Length: 471
Ligand code: F0G
Image 1: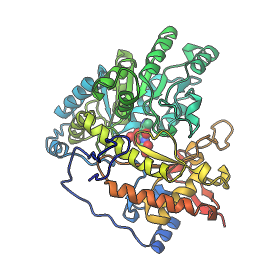
Image 2 (image 1 turned 60 degrees about the vertical axis):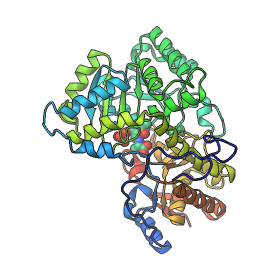
Image 3 (image 1 turned 120 degrees about the horizontal axis):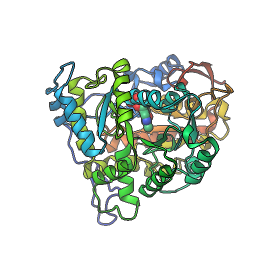
Image 4 (image 1 turned 30 degrees about the vertical axis):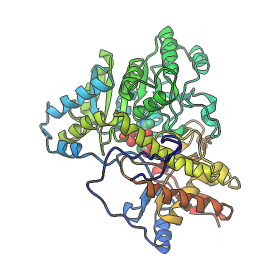
């Protein structure tokens, strides 16, 4: 599959390549429709890649969420589904896997990540509360706001600079956090919303030193820490690679140590855990468990399935175990990095260092002539599809939405297009095709003028908004 030398992860001399620790057993045909077809499809989709039909997409880098290829063991696990309404044996397998690999005491299953975000937000946030975190995520922040909270970003400044090479750009700025705690009062902070890795910053990790120091600070003020563990296995890999003292520790041990400094976690299992659907909320404290176990039956399903089928929970339990294998995670991040290095070599501005799950193109720099209210990243994602049928995602002003108080656009410093790599799905040849397409769009950048937004839904507008090209 992977034939050429990988420049940072393989050996430098004598051409010794690395390759994925798996081979392909089943394939799904894909095709590129012609230019006229792509133009028609993009128009029909209102220049929003979320509104394209998958059939019209050649290489789909919209998201790494629910798009992984499952292993033969996971497919075999689907046949072992115990579809009992209550007490399915697959739930106990899932619970044991979360306890073993993430280390939390209690597990409440949910249909996906935002189901768990809903439960924790409703259980812990009161009107007027402040929720500090390391950069917002779209659904996470919305659930915090809907529960009456205000999210405040306390990530380090380096995270907002796509050129800054800080190895742990996901870190919390502890001075910013302490000042915020003193300003609003510890009793108005229900928990710290800590994500590893940080999606909107470019898939950037949090260091072990940072979470340890965060724990000490929070203990001083009696504040809990809850982790968005969606891509925490990838975060653990970066700790192994970059942080002193962790080079010889398995990713599984690093993951568990990191989680031990937090009080619980929510999870979109559709990412790290190599399944197409699923999630959970886990915690060590009885009070949150009691509340979440009660809320889950209102919104998701009984507390032993939470919106998943028994077979989904079995595939997830197996996926958790596969996701923490060192050779797997090295190959996963190696593929993302391969694409990043090609683009970097060609001078295309991307967020550095390359993160865990995606390459983030710097649309602000690529389309320096397009102002942010003409949606440079939305425009770039549309151009990439028009060029070559590749689907990417806007992560800029459209994703940031409007300030609930002022109603104005929130203008994030980062105006990015995410090329998100599904796990175990595409080959190195696909990555070459993607890099060449990005280069072609980059070379044509001066011809493009931006978009007008012609339809805007009330919540999470990036999913359904419609646009028209400015002529
Ligand atoms: N937290 C993070 C960091 C995420 O990236 C996502 C989803 C969620 C929570 C919500 O989980 O989708 O299972 O409800 N991110 C997807 C993405 C949608 O494409 O980045 P969900």
